Every structure is written in C-alpha cells, then in structure tokens.
Image (cartoon, rainbow, N blue to C red; front, side, top):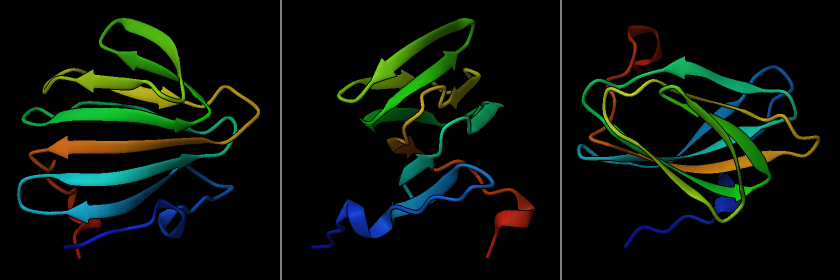
Length: 113
C-alpha cells in the first residue's frame, strides 16, 4: 500500500502556481496544486480527461466553460473532458487543491522526463 502525507508534498513558489504530484498511474494522476495569493492556472482543456478539484484550503475562483464561481474549502468541482477550465486565487491566503485527472492528460513534450 502506498501512502502520502499531504504536508510532505506541499510546495509553493512566488513565481507561479505549483503542481505537486501525489500519485501517478497509467489510469489517473493526483496532484496538490498550491497557489500563493494572485496566482492562477490559465484556462485550458483536456479533450479526453475528466478532472476533479477538491478545495482543501482557501478560496478559489473557478471558471468552467462559461461559468465562473468561487468555492471554499470542503467543495469539490467536476470538469468533464473537453470543457475549458481555470482557477485563480483571488484571496489573500494560500489556496490548496487536491486534483484528480483520469485518464491522465498527455504531458507536453517539454514536461516529459
């Protein structure tokens, strides 16, 4: 059995939102997204992958398709495959999201190891 303590994975950067891998398999990926105030994940979409955001800490402004709403800790948000989505931390506190993507989105060539 593999386990991970979230505190050991949390990483922040003053430059940009950090995507920190928790688990990755051929069928799904799980990450912790860590945002400082004002940081954002630019709008994008995954043609073949669903995504679930779980707000663990803070408040995020989510844009899913044409809808924009703020969600606080304790809220989950589903993004169906093909739907454009993005997040911004408009608050003065950090934002932490647990993110599940299935199947995993293909890596951009510059992100492959």
